[in-house]
Image 1 (cartoon, helix red, strand yellow):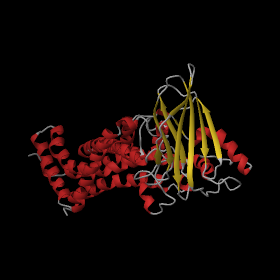
Image 2: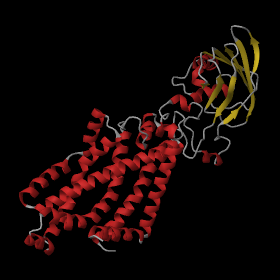
Image 3: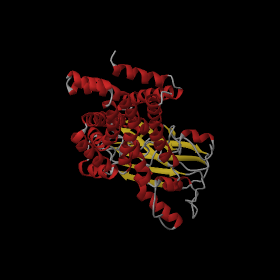
Image 4: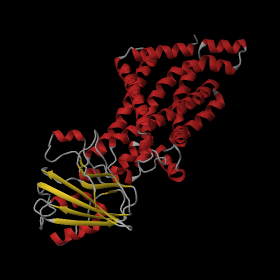
Length: 449
């Protein structure tokens, strides 16, 4: 067994004999399993992540579902209702189809949105909805050539007119939750004050469609304000899916940047320390220059100009951070160069490259393993920072991009804490096992503890 293999085995044993090291290894295995599951289970969803229409039936900015247990009157899940369509009129030029929904609402707040889903075999020409409240008041909504799923913002013109007729003006920033308050509130000046009219509601949907059109599916969604383990964002995208799909990307960029930069830094620093003299001085000067470069501003400029892929971004980061590992490897190589067996190789006329790969690299390998583990979190944090600044590689789902969306939509101001907490927490959690393992190996290298 070579000295490199012996060193690797020794420090792996150091990790596995340490309780914190075992926890770190277990966490990494768990993250890898979750990454594989996410890529397999949500393979098709990943391509739809930025397609707002795909998420229309999901509740917007819904808090985690487990929050329902703390206040079931104000926090609730989405409710869905199905009804049987009936044909009211049929001719050679068009048909009139009606779908009626009837439901009771006893919650203390209105749904965050109402979505009408009607799937037909031919495109719908017009849709007309009569919304009837428990006290008999009615609101009429209409639209031409609607999509299969229409939310309240699709009928904003009709609802703005209704709100204006009740309170005398239209609020400056109308969102779906405001329109929902109008459908569930008492008529009059207090229409939008949040007071809910409890009782039985009716929604009569009338469709004008081409002849022989079939209604293949229909649902009325009353969007709750709670969904999934981690809640949703302003587009209705479940943050749990986003976090799961962001995990393999985070691990990939972390491993790539760490492996490339550590291997490059160890080889360059090792050669510099081994050769010494003017060559060492020149390499060390270049290393110090690279070490002084401001990493984040450089990456921001390069990402803005080139919009690199994940691999290119990993190479950029590696190019900027290898010098840190080269400085440490050079110091270790200078110590090894003074050993007797190195001098013996020179006396025996053994080629320099053989001496380097026989004596230097095996003794630098454990150091490389330790710093590879410690370098993964640095790579993850850098790429997530770029994503937070809006510079993520195109089409890539990252936690930083999710946080960027939260910042742009004022999640902190609006109290959407889950949109900020969970992506940020994942960046920390993914970094922890690598730090634990890196420190465990480092203790084995320097302290033997």
